[in-house]
Length: 349
Image 1 (cartoon, rainbow, N blue to C red):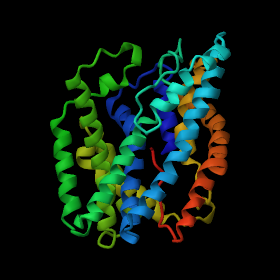
Image 2: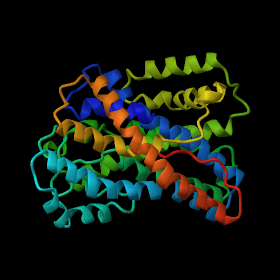
Image 3: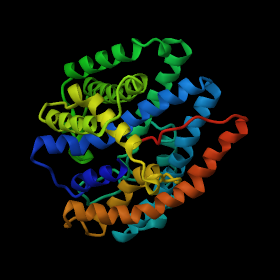
């Protein structure tokens, strides 16, 4: 999923578009939607296995926040100054301006309210945007809170609640106008958004992620009733591909996508693919700024798949450092709670 996000951003960040709308929709949305579906499955499992608020939120916070905070600092004080220096500017002046500190503090709570650092990056197809992947983490956190609320109130134990919420979320998404044209426009080309439009954009995001997270949660609920078969995975993939011709493929393909991802993972038994170290979060949060640096270096002329491979190769070492130096040590702190924690999902995010 994280590698797929790199691939999609390689079109966006080099100023290219995909004219075939079904491919455009799946390449743009499918990867992050997959993250939310997997999260819905695993986070629901996490609460059901150990329904304690303290343990639950400690596990969620330790998985997301330390890596996120360090990423903000690295972007503000390392990557952005490097970008400025490559373009012939003064990184020292940027660091002394206070803009990096403002960037970190304004985004500290997961809600991304500032995307640029003193107007940088400049002279790129997506200016004023250092890491457009981070905005989804806020919605992921809201999904965690929603599961906790359903769990504490006892609603999560009622088998009808998640299916009903999923149907309502799908209906909600059908009633909303698409905001993709505005969201995909570079920051410097977006129209000034009035309050009503901003609310519609937020509603689109809320409905989208609610549908995918609840699809994963529903799959967890019915996991013992639905068989895990490769034939059903293949059928689910066909449904997803066919649904991409709709204005919103999630209307019919949210649950099939969740099934295809979770079940295929369960059916793959190759021990070499059971990795003990999870670099996906680091790849997700560091790839976009690395891609911006590559564009600043003049590599936007490359074909998007080639650009994506180069970006992934440079991002992986950063992701490994994030895992070994930040994420893994932070997650080890869960042991201080004196209890064994349930499995956790990597946020998209």
